[in-house]
Amino acid sequence: MSSVSGYFPSNTLLVTAVLSLVERKPLMNVWRQCYLSSFPYYLIGASIAGPVVLCARSMGLAVPLLVLPLMLMVHVFCRAYVARVAS
Image (cartoon, rainbow, N blue to C red; front, side, top):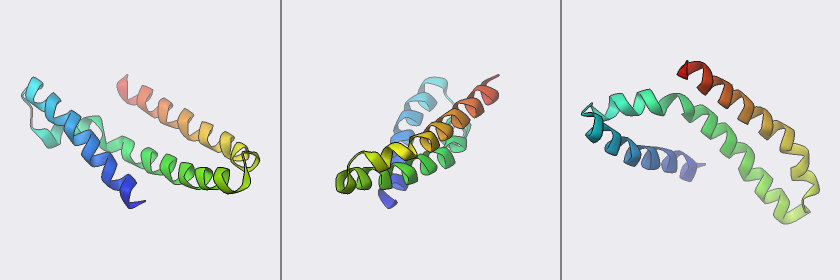
């Protein structure tokens, strides 16, 4: 989980740095506006995906396929949140 929580800020801060230079806005303001609210969804998705990958390696694809509806639900909620914030 530590690599997930490290990857998200490093990846998003690089993109945010470019956006803040282009828009001439403070880096942290742009990062909070664009990415901070999506971090919980990112962590939830990663915490589901990690065990699914481990199960697929050890037990085959049957068990991870049972988790697919949960993953789809997280995706749908995330997209609905983003759409609500964007409008």
